[in-house]
Length: 83
Image (cartoon, rainbow, N blue to C red; front, side, top):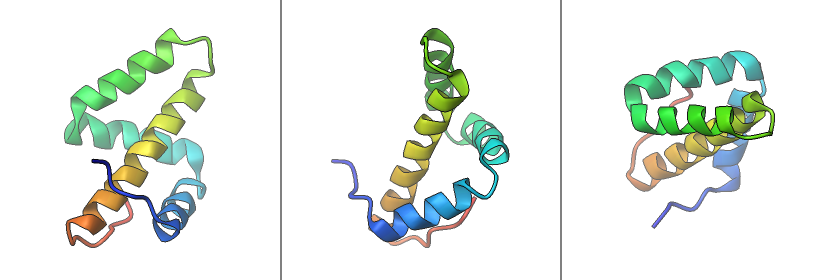
């Protein structure tokens, strides 16, 4: 089961993401290449093969990944580090 994302986790992620969306998205590409390359490949493939804006598709996917990561870390008793 996926973890429940709280309002606090959303606020933390959004403050991190919206400081500079383009830089954050690029950082997530590099982070996921190391952390979870299969997910990164899937996100990039989805972004390339849709009629939607590829950067917007990738941003939404990376944002969702980060929210789930924060919620999962909290559920597992880890501190939520800002990437």
